[in-house]
Image 1 (cartoon, rainbow, N blue to C red):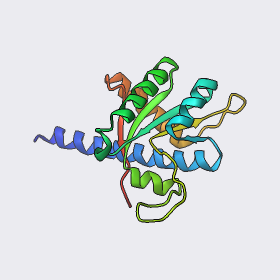
Image 2 (spheres, one colour; image 1 turned 120 degrees about the vertical axis):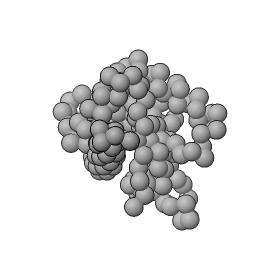
Image 3 (cartoon, rainbow, N blue to C red; image 1 turned 45 degrees about the vertical axis):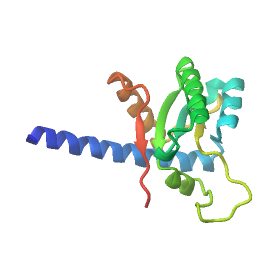
Image 4 (cartoon, helix red, strand yellow; image 1 turned 180 degrees about the vertical axis):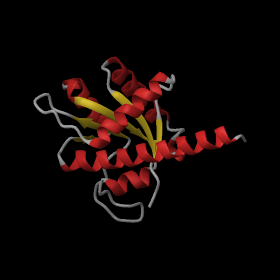
Length: 160
């Protein structure tokens, strides 16, 4: 491996960590400000009613769920809708970290009801011009990915 390749790999890893941190910051801020829609069904309803308020769609899945055909069909439909409506989309892995960020019970904790975290929408109502550093960073990453013909960028949330 050449020095240029090593530097490029380190730069890419650093960029991924920056974007991962931005996603975490964005999710926490959006939930705190009631700008987060959680769940495939809930997200589909919102996008049908008010797609212009959606600024980012996160599709979350771990490796062990990749074979879930129903979930993949939902994701395909959501991706198509987001592309048609110019909504940035990111594929996220690290469901445990995602649940932790959103205050969901862990896999060993008892809970009456857990939310479906496979689809998350970050909204920005038309009357508001909310800008978070995380949203700007993630939107920039999505744009860079599209320029490199990667239409569905992947981000991995690391457990802490």
